[in-house]
Image 1 (cartoon, rainbow, N blue to C red):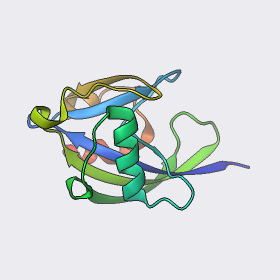
Image 2: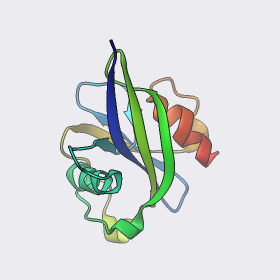
Image 3: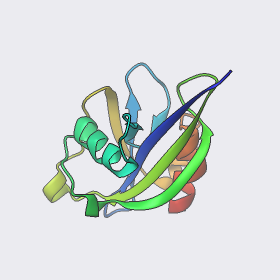
Length: 135
């Protein structure tokens, strides 16, 4: 029997059109910031909480816009599917800093979408849903 996760994820782009991708400690796949919804937590609230925990930014809800819901395989959990509530936001280095990662993240990187699509180390959500919105 497979497991199922409900997550919120944020497609963050900068003024150059690059995408912020993160990699969790102990994993190989790059993905967008985000994480599992807590019991009773709305997807938007989960996205804002995860941005605070992972990137140290405190954003108003208005900074995020919904890109809908995606269903597919989880990147780092075997035999697990997920429902991803996907949001979009723009990074402003003047107000948001340099995107230093924290919490359970090992690293972050700004990816050029046309180059990122050629990589083989991307989470399915990033590869199949997020990158096509930018190409």
